[in-house]
Image: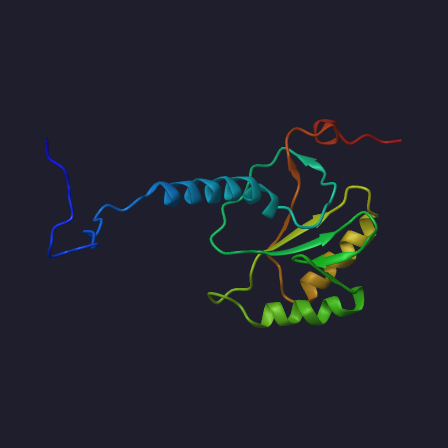
Length: 154
């Protein structure tokens, strides 16, 4: 029967433990993984906008586009920052003046379906005047009832 008794030379000293306890590390990493899994879907939507339906396919992107949003109250948002309508042309000109890769960035225009058509067209006119001609209208993917019907006369 072998016992680990302290010797006369090393009275009260213990040998260092060479094993690393990884259980706390694994616990922390699993908690962080769960936190990131829960919060990642919340980071995608910025301004709540009721988008129209469309049957178009999603676009492939190579660089981060500029997002311009119009909510149901008619307020303008550049990315996630609210912007006054009279300040929009100057901000768009600054964006168009600093192109990444030689061409101006693509603009994603997100407009609420309840907005006046003229209001959306005024914003698109400001985009065109600033030289931002690569505009994509963001919609909800799926078959819309209005897109399936034909244009009729009244």
